[in-house]
Image 1 (cartoon, protein in one colour):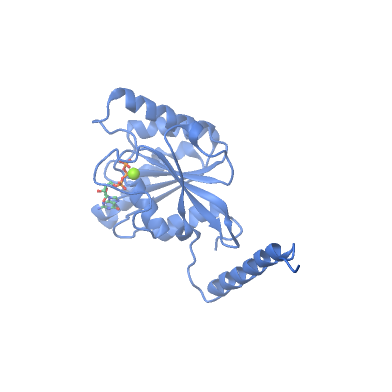
Image 2 (cartoon, rainbow, N blue to C red):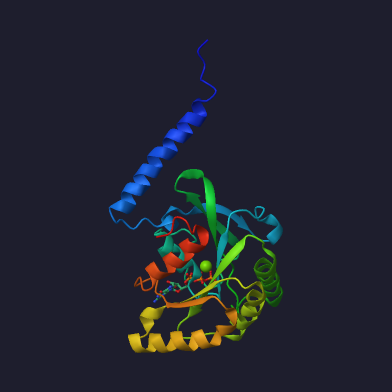
Length: 240
Ligand SMILES: Nc1nc2c(ncn2[C@@H]2O[C@H](COP(=O)(O)OP(=O)(O)OP(=O)(O)O)[C@@H](O)[C@H]2O)c(=O)[nH]1
Ligand SMILES: [Mg+2]
């Protein structure tokens, strides 16, 4: 006779959101660094573009040569050890892997996605398979309407290679903001890192909105700066 009130579900949700909001505001007021990215969780994998969920909340994709450190970067930025499975075997990430970022105030709804894309340039991969990946990557970069920004991972010791230039040609016409992470920066001294960053800035100038940040997943170099840029693309209103 006294079943659940029709508004009960709505009330619980409202109540939960209110307490989450209070906890979130409390953490911010106590100066805690609450990164949205640490809430990332696996969402979907796709071998082809057609298998991706329909475009929705803003996506920030991670692209770069095979072995450049894309998966390691996502792991350290999300504070999770094995989210996209970084590996010692180049060419391991053959799928598009999407990770959702739940809205802190409404965790059932993603406010954005991090997208780990297959690496390019691994010589041991058969030619035909390489061409397939190239077309998946190229179409994702050119056509995916929910793509909001690009994180381009470049090994700091190699700089911008021909294959990276091909990718840049795909991104440039869309005017997407780009964060170039110069990965494995722990392999160079401070002066060489700055030189590499300046050279990359010149080389990528055609990209318009561009940030170049020396980065190391193992030594946590550039992690906070990268986090701030990515958060500002996903949720401008919540980012500090
Ligand atoms: N020294 C150092 N090694 C790193 C860093 N980031 C990644 N690595 C190493 O580089 C190798 C490749 O890293 P991944 O993150 O798997 O590279 P990926 O770009 O995802 O590679 P694919 O999935 O093949 O495209 C691994 O052996 C990592 O441990 C870093 O910041 N410093
Ligand atoms: Mg990978």
